[in-house]
Image (cartoon, rainbow, N blue to C red; front, side):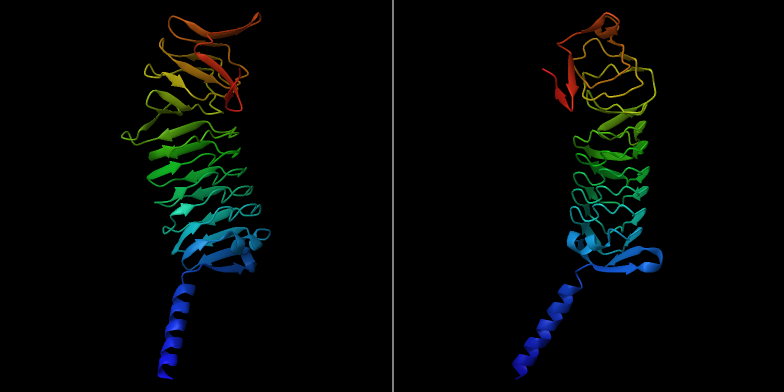
Length: 275
């Protein structure tokens, strides 16, 4: 008898301990706010039922992760508050959150692929001192104008596709492997991002640059590059007239047609060279 009682006590103790690790979801109707408390990881199946009525989300301390697609299609959500305990934001967690206007990313968070894709009204993002950005994290964020980092640890193939309003990218820590000049993002001898909405009609790349990986901009007309530039992956730039160094013309568009150095210029569309 005593053994059975002890077993039941142990069982309920373990059950309560485990249940305390799960997030708790409370919807406050008066201001359309979803409050998430407890510990563990936010799950898509638990949170998805709130997507058509939630305007604000408050995630309290203790929550460590957000599962992939958790807040997908939360089209009414304008604001979300993250806790410092958060460690990862899963793949496509906030895709199609078209009313979300600003986000403050807490320290030690890893943003996974496509975290904020298609957030049309996202204008302001505050990053911690050190952050890494993965593929498609901010694709189709059409109102995003500026990205400012202190220390950028990784920028993994994040081309900011269709971020048509972005004017500048900034990295302030001089010890970071990623550098910026006049809003353009570099690493080593390569251009990583030339912003879509950078309004300069001409731009001169530093002498150290050997490869321009991405350029798609409706404003630029003239580009100046080093003599020993190796490769330019040129995306369609409707007003671009010339790419040249001090001693050579690599690309020239005139009434007679287009001339280009095919050993240097690789014209691309949708990220792939045209053969």
